[in-house]
Image (cartoon, rainbow, N blue to C red; front, side, top):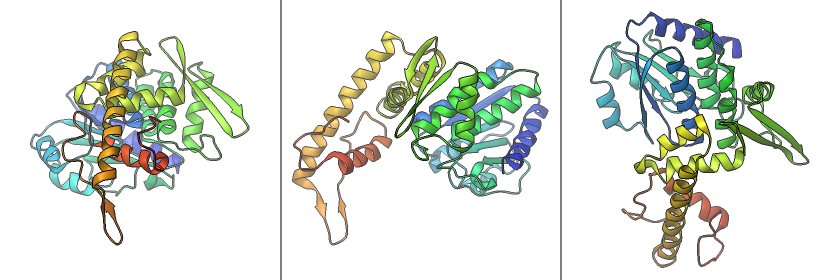
Amino acid sequence: MIENLLSVIDSAVCSLKNEKQKEIRLFHHNDTDGISSGTILTSAFEDIDYAVSRFSIEKPYPQILEKIFSECGKIIFFADFAGKIAPMISEMNQGRNLVIILDHHPAEAVMDDRVFVIDGELFALKGDRDISASATSYLFAERLLSSFGLNGQQYAHLGALGAIGDGFFVDGALSGINRRLMETAVEHNSARIVSETSGESYFIRLGGEEYSAGELCDMLDTAGGVGYYSNGVSTGIEICRNGMSQKNRSFIEKLRKTRDQIFTREITELKQNLQTTEHLQWFNVKNRFQPMGVKMIGVFCSCINRNWKGKTAYSGN
């Protein structure tokens, strides 16, 4: 389990350190788990003087992968996606680049010494319970920094934060590796746990201020999803590093208003134009969700499934 996962991480760290160049291309998802992963990895690489070019992508579309693997001699990281398509990545890469995938979704292993698939699902861990992408990224960062004589435990709170954002709870509390990271964060005064009758509540310290983890995850999801095309992911990274500024609060509040206006308008559209067949109900949003990212279509579907019971407007929660 964890020992075998750590062994693969150590092999990937060794391969990374054997590369002559010190430039990394990091691709990560745009929700709380992906933003937390991106923050951990960017910060850890910068701690050891690597130059990082960071890109947030909603999905690894074929056109994007073709562009990524059109070059050679690069160090490429994927965080919070790509585990399942590792065989395709290996085929596209043809050994030209060092590729390290840090994921928690169902994954496929590859026999390729230039492509590392670091995913708890391959090591008897549950990616929707025991270990998030941010926890996986933390484990990699911690082992990497340790190999340079540095302490990576300062990022444990971000490792746990992604799991909270993805809702990976057992009986209302984090479990597995996610829980271990939260406990490490508590030891380092970067997180706090409050026991409740229904489970636990978590608080995260960023930039000297404490935030409710639930509120923080909502901010990051909003920044990364609603603000995907307006530099929202970079704002999320900044929040994870330094906490909330008034500028960022105002930016996120503006994004929330945009989201609520679009969702309310779309519910009105649905009441008039929902397509119904014998087994399916469907609708075509066309370009009406612009300027939000495509992930917000799924968020909208979850909202109407949870909240819409004949209401005339989106409830905003």
